[in-house]
Image: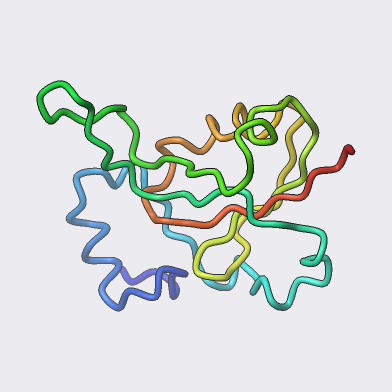
Length: 132
């Protein structure tokens, strides 16, 4: 069965998904369930704060992976702002399409735990801090 067009833009995504040994952590996202970031009428209130990338980082001891996660957050803001407990509204953006609008009261660093291991696709996370 062929799924609706996925936001990945990969022509044979169904075949790749079916053959993947990590498919229990992959969620195919139909393009019609998303909107383009460029079309979002509040986009000027959000700034990029982290890139989400595949976690391929190797530790110093023997070439093993450093963490048991599929993805990692690479902050684009200061570590202090990234680690501070604060309220944030965020957009999860993959391939310039908004796939999730959410919020956290615990800060970005703690909120990322929800996403670790959920989706191996590289993504960019844009967030807007709601408290000054």
